[in-house]
Length: 160
Image (cartoon, helix red, strand yellow):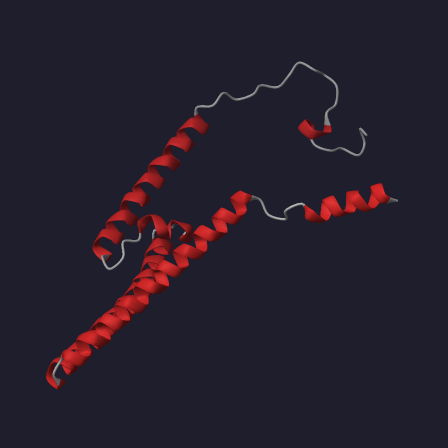
């Protein structure tokens, strides 16, 4: 009985996590803490600067922040519209929509359209090469085997 209890006690004392797991978790927590600390310091610095600003400077800073936020939203909308336009161009070029990430250049539709044309030319050339290789492939000739093969000659119910 005591041996079984000792074995259970030893198993219950085994660490659930290894030292490596603990170190990785500790490192993750430290990274998160440093990021949060940096954000808090940055916010405190902004608040300190705001306290030292006049009303006019404060208004200008708020205006700049609003302009940045507006520009970010504007860029997001532009990117969304451009992706939709790129998908239409891909469809017109008879290319798969999976190629979107290959050809799309954010906020630059001219480069995107050039990339679509390049990809289209590559696909046409590839199709031509495949077709030429298929045409030039040797044709299998009929064998001298005189036994009936329904898969080659077609199924005939009279011969089965």
